[in-house]
Length: 421
Image (cartoon, rainbow, N blue to C red; front, top):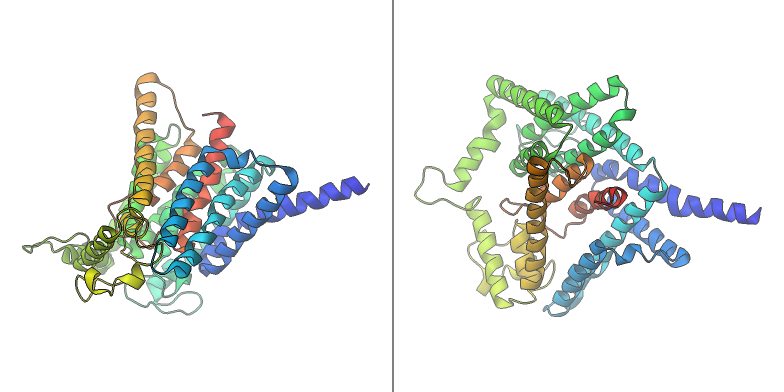
């Protein structure tokens, strides 16, 4: 009897609780960085205790974790070689939680077959909530909580003054699509049609949010999926085309809807002028400043999260607008803050994804075989858009965005191992 209760309690602590916490990450991402980061930390801690207690060391021998530890070591070394060691270490040392969280997700999927169903339903609820609130804010100027639009005609829904509504939707929609593919056979027709409608309205909402990077990443992920998936290409294509028709219709009625996506972008890159900028003059100044920091320490960089502390130094100043919390491009941020060591590793991961893209395509077209399931393709799309280099981005070391970066990886590892790809 005691053994039964011991097993029962252990299952609750090591499987049930972290499974529930993980499934609610899409919801808590709407509340800001604190709660999703707390969930990641708790899940990582629980799995670490579980690993020691039940000798789950095989997870730590995986290729993913070996690569992660290599990157983590680079962060620590870069911090130790920086001018502000303690300040940089405050960011780099806790970064280990994301790698262990990924292993936790992989482990949970092995023992909780309903985790995908749970996180799918939570994400479905979040998308529905944001669609209702976002369109309400677009038409009436305030959201359901009475929060006014900060910058008309852009909408931010429950994110308030944080312009991440589009980023949240664009980065999670391939993950959501993957879960939909995985669960498709178990869904009733009403739910399937609801999901189709959500895809259409979500893509429209991303456009209305006015986040150019998010809108680009959305279309990039759709193209990636359309080229590589086997069974659900028509579904994704029809939803994409329907959303394009809806966007064009809204823009015809209200031309200001496309102002930030098209007009502002053209103005900022200097279209029609003698000089064309990389994203914008301000973005270009950030990048030049980051490159100067890289030149000051080519191997180790200036240390993680120290761009903000160095950009005001005379040798790194480009203009009055060159200083910021980060250089607004993850590759130049990695280059400046971790040097060639971190930059080469991140570039290698991206080019490996590109290699997998063409390899899968070759097998599909010429050998009539597949390397990855449609579920895995959708998860790979998440990683592909996260590591896409030629766009302005938030900080690579931002806790909120890192939760989104690492969330699909555990699912991907599990699916690949499950199918022995």
